[in-house]
Length: 102
Image (cartoon, rainbow, N blue to C red; front, side, top):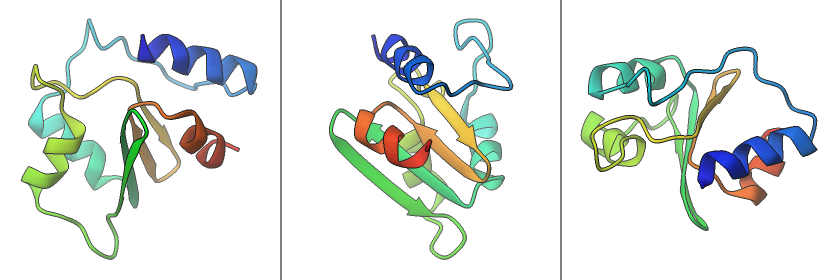
């Protein structure tokens, strides 16, 4: 389970969350996902080893492209999603987490 791997990574690297939302209890659809992206300068979306980076300040893609990387097959924001400052991180990739969360 990806969220389990994320929890293990955060614990082993002594990274703590200031806020945690249970994706099973609170869903983020198109509008809410785009609102998160609007607050970010960068977005990293990961599926397995594939990592896609968007510089939202310099070259923001259209909403459809963003949503295709942010939402899962159910139409909800993919989990895990983390926000570190102005960086939004969607999905899990250990190497990318190690770089972004140091």
